[in-house]
Image (cartoon, rainbow, N blue to C red; front, side, top):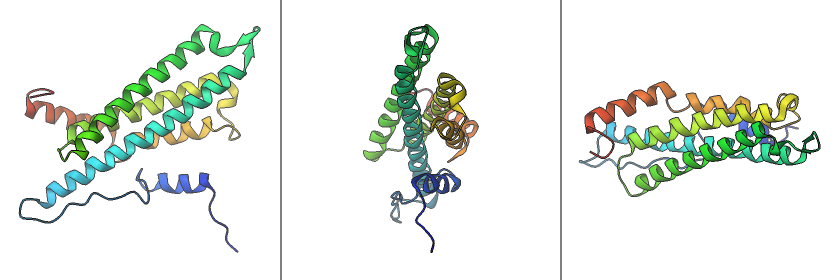
Length: 191
């Protein structure tokens, strides 16, 4: 008799579906005379990018929390490794970048909730959050040292999952092109 998939198996299946969150609400775009098919597709892309940004925040936060717990527990030279300058610097950078990515994502999501187009903002959130998740996962593997690779530690999974955020819902190279194009058309950030 087949068994239900584990959380990890469900997570992996979900990630193989192009970085989309299964069961996530889809953007409803009513077909009225004022909404075109292209406009609806744009809104769906914005929502998808925001969802990938949110997922990247989750991966980054989990990697940071696991790294902090490990750094508080693991001792070298008579003190927890977070007290060593290099490990402490990694943790500080991870927390700072994650907070910035979260704020960027929240700002874009609030604008979208208000009914405004957020193609630039969603692209920025997806780009920054996914790059941040990748860097945090990389630094988490460094903090864990040899324990960053075996499957017994979740850090290994974060390091595998983070790159999927970079390619899901449009690669980060595409996001940079979209952002640059919108900036050029707007004449700046707030124009």
